[in-house]
Amino acid sequence: MGQEIDANILIHPRKGKKEKNLPENGILLVNPSEASLCHQQLKRSGGESRHLFNSDLTVAASHSFFSSGPAIGAPMAAMSMEKLISLGAKKIILFGWCGALSRTLKVGDILLPHEAKSGEGTSRYYPLPTPAAPSTIFRSHIEKSFCDNDMIVHSGCVWSTDAVYREDRGMLQELNSRDGVSAVDMEFSALCSVACFRNIEFAAVLIVSDELWGTAWKPGFSSDIFVESKSKALEIVLACIDSLGE
Figure 1 (spheres, rainbow, N blue to C red):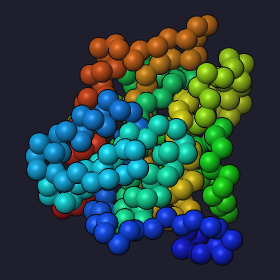
Figure 2 (figure 1 turned 180 degrees about the vertical axis):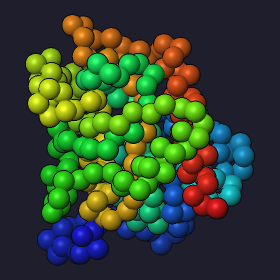
Figure 3 (figure 1 turned 90 degrees about the vertical axis):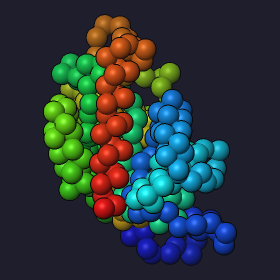
Figure 4 (figure 1 turned 60 degrees about the vertical axis):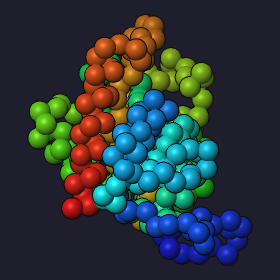
């Protein structure tokens, strides 16, 4: 569908005359902490720094993959993905955090969502014949990488919102009980929509950073288990995306 040119759309993502093509495989990191760590790691190994809006873009020295981000929120994440696709990206892994709505998820758990529900405003501008979802095969490949490293991962539905400070307790409970939503983030559903619209492979790895299913909010952003889990998960994701270029 993304190959169809809509004459009524004013601005299309494009590759600039002086811009270089990207490797087909890459990772889009939501948060500044992991994005900075990832870019620094690639640069120390001889990676090439490039421009991506008000974010960073680094191509690994092997040219087998790229890292991009941070890109917080659906609009910025969608803009970044559109640009990455126009530069040649065909497989993208989102690496981010999520808040747990299901009691089966605890801080530090790793979620590989298989379904998306939109509470953000970006997805509706990417019309699709069927609901947007991550690539089943690509997601399975990532899941195998975690299993090979003896890391437990969870599956579930993620609801994305633009307004983290307007998450109503009753609404979240209803999303969980009625719609089977396991967790909430800000980017996943929009990126599913962009990926499906542009016909690329996309999947996400989300680390549970806080729990929203109890009587009170339980943040875990600075907990040892969260910090350790996201560090191990990022290491596995980088090895996984690197191996795709072999």
